Image (cartoon, rainbow, N blue to C red; front, side, top):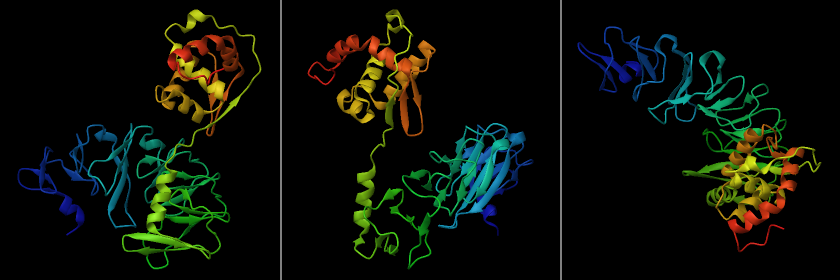
Length: 341
């Protein structure tokens, strides 16, 4: 008996998924894959009716067996969205940023659209779709860097990057290296020697070692915890004063957004902004505030790049025009601080 016969079944009266009855028309019911089925009007996943799906245009893009545990996984799509059914969950992920016509399955858990790359239905941060290539079900790379699942491996060299396979197991390794460094998941292993590094499984964990020392599973996990820090973008400022004059009446109700911009320019550091705001304004709120100011002024005051935020000439001019006012607001914001000068 095929596995799909165990997932989907029909008797004289009803339709079932893993012996759980579903509200489907048994006369028109048909199986699309282990992950999806249809009765012509509705699409069903293993969790039930997939309300977001458009039945007339729904199709299976690719179904595959995951290499780590042999589980069944599937990409599907319709005129609106793409869907990913993982072996880890009965409920599929809905990729709302792309439709089936714009989506290409690469291999295993990977797919891409014209704008983004996906691993198990989740966007891979910073990945370039044009130069992206798959290494295995865990690692990938593009022209700029390598990736562990959905996360970029900062500082990695895509030309010399390669996974470090376990010496005693066929399981997918979480170690990798290039000609300069060694990585555990997406984290740098400090001072590890790339040329002599090797890895192995121990029970439910693993270890790595080079010619100088060994890293235990506990040390590697602690390394991850230490590295779970937000990498804030660098702040660059164009200090050219423009001839734009901003009337203060524009900013009624936008005092907090102005304050966020003032602090960012004043310290030229997102990390310092976070420190002096003492949790009263999050970094996310800062960025949203700057965006709202740009919409209000219809003038770019900051440019958000991949790793930098550039305060434009207009943004710096706004800062100089209302700097004194913002200092007073800052003291009201945190009267015990003398940081803003």
